[in-house]
Length: 336
Image (tube, rainbow, N blue to C red; front, side):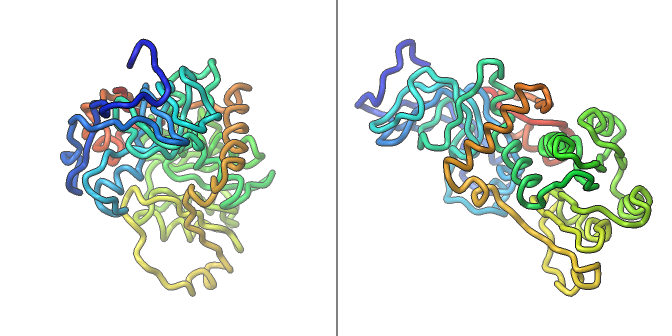
């Protein structure tokens, strides 16, 4: 970080510490190196990264499930302070604290990219919280507001209730008036899920559909929010009420194989959707609207952000391994 950052200085690009992926594979392909940091062009900013969020999409990209041109610096979420701005930038100023959900290359000490996706960070929010909220918070917001719009009186099922999205999604569903059932892998995680507002927690995933039926007097739930994927998919469908909605938003256990759509008919005229965030923050107005509601709930104390694990940038491989192995709760962040 420079003592006196200036907008768009000409000259050679800086070299900054970053994680780079040169081949797809396991966590070991995440290697610490130095990369060029270009100065900001028109409409761009350079930001000193204070914390970077770690998400399952980073794991999918590293594995090659979602393909990216190689080599690349992973990460798209973080929080930091603006170091320099390019021509035409009026959303932020040098020195501002900002957060973002979609700035590629965030596993680095600094990053340059478009200014239009940046969010102003309230002073009451610390750097780790600011890095933890954008991607998972925005995801939880569009899931509960749009993918299946939660209504007062609904009962919904949230898988991985102690994970980063799960904790936020549970709280948002409760704010919107729903009763929330969650699944977790351990009793310790179950306690975190209950603290987030879950009315019932199912510990373990074997036979959870039968338990959901018991808890809903045989009716099933209005919606299942499933980021686990392959291992939970069949029982998730079996947990839905007539005309229920399956919201499949991830695959931490693996991707769901193709299936016969007639199962939706036989299951009670079910619906299924596979959303992605880019389609739910398609404009800056939509991004700011969601972020304003999230930060508002946070400021009011109605929404809490749990940072479950923080790793040095150099330990990105361990962070990925712990996340994929479900050894973490809440949000995982890297600190350059």
